[in-house]
Length: 219
Image 1 (cartoon, rainbow, N blue to C red):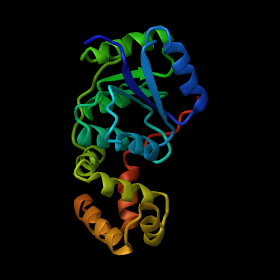
Image 2 (cartoon, one colour):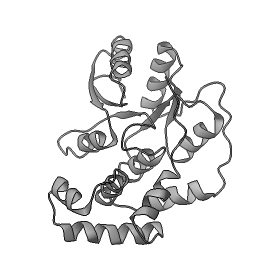
Image 3 (cartoon, rainbow, N blue to C red):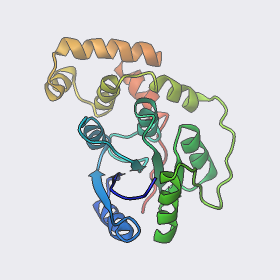
């Protein structure tokens, strides 16, 4: 595989960081089409474009609409052939270990140099796994977070989108309007979501989703 005519998505909610990435990578990845997403919903919209195929997603774990590892889990479940490399301000071994456990092809700390970033992307694009030198991968034992991740993977893309909108506090009527479907359809999705997550109502569903979140890190 030659690293040319690539289509790469930068999924991060900080415009300055996205611009810095594109600028820094313009040299080693000069023949690349860059796409940007500032939220989980924007990322989903890009991926749903059937006329466009992507070579890689650079994913921030804490975009709006994303709950920790939830977007990573969703991507690996529904777009298994699309490599995802997590780029995060969290650099602890457990965060790195969970990201790899949930299917990331690599993990780049946001503190990494641009030379390191370019090397990591090159490695992943060639099909390898890339990790920072300090990473010590830990075994992920089944706990509440891992159990929820497994259940989340069972949701369809539309059900996942509805669950995200539940987390935003939107009513069924609002969700139906935004998605262009009937309110009855949203209620049917809700029933399926509750069953798959093993909960009884929207509040419990949102609390379950929040188990995948991490503490905020200021850049």
